[in-house]
Length: 134
Image 1 (cartoon, one colour):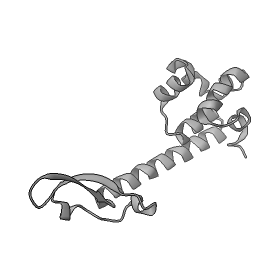
Image 2: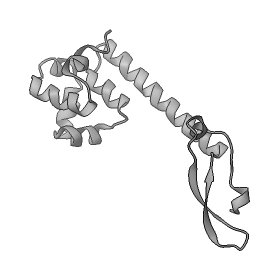
Image 3: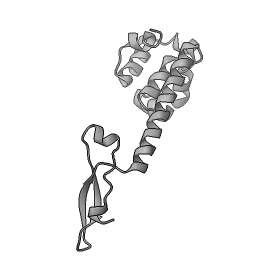
């Protein structure tokens, strides 16, 4: 793409006055760098992704309130993690973390285990246990 044709569409990046560095060709056909405020298709895809994440967070919150899953699931979604990532952060096997998703198992976890989750989510044990129901 030629430098003067690099898209400058409004996007989520423009809200924070952020520009993206792109490669383009100059008038001599040589590659150079240039800044772009965004590209509409990319902005739409990013917006859709954010909407999906927010939907997953809302679903996880409702599942916790319904007693279907433990708060770990909610905070995992809020922190944009999946089971594999969370397990690696807390240092437990995936099957063990998945077991902690059960409210009955979560209720029996000791403070040492809860602290690992709290540290990972950068919250207190108290917030991990009670912040969703408030």
